[in-house]
Length: 202
Length: 202
Length: 202
Image (cartoon, rainbow over all chains, first blue to last red; front, side):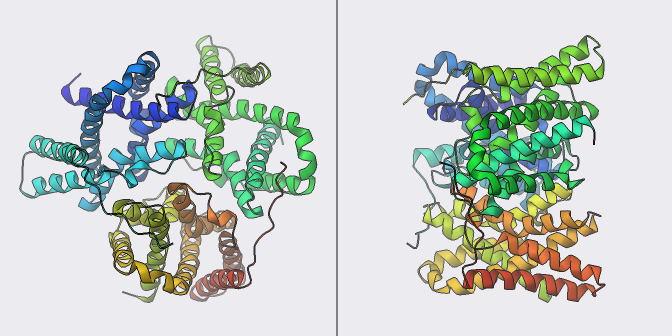
């Protein structure tokens, strides 16, 4: 198991935990919490793969199901203490966001799409799972109102393509883009950076 | 029209009725109720077919539209008496669940997917239409909080693959799996079997 | 830029505006409003393209992203006055509905589908974006309860296939179908034509 796989599973675990916790706040049963956790973790990548017309990534290996099961077991066993790990999960979540964004961009490039499609796919991979999660638990999607989240993926995408433009080697490009997403996200939360809200008319 | 087709249409009818009734409780108009009924009936199979990258089954024959129209006509004409048929619809719904789960499993196998994908596809075919229905009417999905529903499909999937493992003939395998789903569902409702709920943190 | 393209962009603009305004009423930030506007504008066509198994149209040219950005800029700059333009946007929206329905029908025919699939695809292209919009902002879909909207697309589809049946030339067929949708929609709103509501049981 190489480094990237470990990060992938950590990100999946953190995304699944966020879905399971919000589902449990709505008094979902174990199965419902598992489904919401799984959708949170793989939903963004699934939308991406449907749009790119490739087999959804989680249908090719069972590991995402297993990681989600581990997340559910974790919340069941350590539910009371999970709240003390908020900062840990927040870090995992940001790391997952950065990794997922890069994965989405590279999959778009592999299928011959231009830059702007790549940035959309990176952002969908990172952020659309959370939107599906909030739809399933019948809440207004959090990412449309809180600190910068999806926009961090857009920023990382711009960094990625800037690196491509200057012929930066692939590995460094990936690291730069992922770190940009993670830093943008961490700084946004630390300094409560949000976008302006539109003023409603009524 | 063979036996399986009749069961398929009965299941579709029961699923459509459940969508139409919930839509009418939200004061949807006839068109809205028709759409919710149709999505409830074919939504799970549609998600399955999109994931498997095949043409959605209802685009190949108009009969599902017709069955949904019949369900709408039925509710319009006999709305007041429908409530007395709750037990009948519940039986149809359980039978549809069992049949749909088996259809989903076999379509996955036909496309070369392993057991765990087949079980997911069977469960999606049976249960995802109800989740889409609840999303459209803006309610928290029922199946994540009430008596065992989707899990009955998972159980039926395990029975199906156990039969495969022991070289049981195809028809008996199908019947065993479908009956397992139906029995699991009926017993769960009769004895109010639910999964544990996760305790929310706040 | 030909006439059809201009109408396409006007329709996209009107659809995006409707998403952005409803998002702003829910206090979404700029990014959230942009996403809701974009989903409203391209969501119906995206569902159609996924069902038809072709690349979603907006992934082939960036113009829909640009038109949505223009719509967001417009609401940010002229938010206070937008309400006075309600009638203008309503006309654009109806024109977009007519055009989108015709586009959906023709794309289905190009892929060899029968009439009833074409009518569904035309209706999805015109009306499904609004359903996705209402799901994202966590409201019950408006089109299931208000004046005739999706049904105008069904009507336009019937007109389209009637023209085909009588060998009307393609351009006249398109215009007749689109105008039918637009007129049906305008008259429905002017005279408050709604479908009957189903009486809930409880």
